[in-house]
Amino acid sequence: MTRRIAFITLAVLCLTMLITLLARIDMQERDALCNPVDAVVVLAGRPDEDRQRLTEGVHLVERGYGRYLILPLRDSGLSWETLQKLYGIGRSIPGEKVLIGRPEHVDSAVLEYCGGTFGEATLTMGLMQANSLRSAVVVSSRYHIPRVRLAFQRLNSRNHLAFSYQPVGEPETDKLLSSARALAKRLVEYGKFFTAFFVYPVGAKLIEGDLSPEE
Image (cartoon, rainbow, N blue to C red; front, side, top):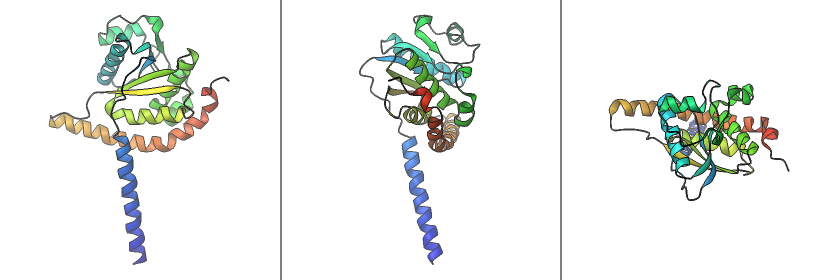
């Protein structure tokens, strides 16, 4: 009987933790963009998502929400001009207003241990500090935003910089195949978020000195 009670108690606690975790993951409402920020940050993704994210980021800059466009993690072969041609993006943002981070600019151990999203957050904060930028709106796919928030919050624990978040895309459509793919993507993201919840604090400790602003 004692074992059964202990098992039931443990199951209830695990279920409560899972519900809490999923509720936190699903906090996807966009932040209100009331005032302009210093930069618009566009996180990389698969080609279809990348186009959607980048298009939204460019529109935000064009509408005056940010002075700079930051692309924190792009392969060395991808220049701003190449991305414009690849995705059919207009040329309203001059190259000097586009800040691009490269994989070689972040510790390979950080990328390997914490993953690309954490690496992008690390590079973003480094680029912002190097260019005296204090605030930014971060653009990514809707399902990805909770993990993005977690990465930036861990790295910005002292609130030296101000971040808001802009999700793009919808998690599901009324088409069965699209909905199944969206559900599979969400389930994968749940696993990544759960891992990140434990890994990101360790990663933040590893690079804490590199991101501390000069007094």
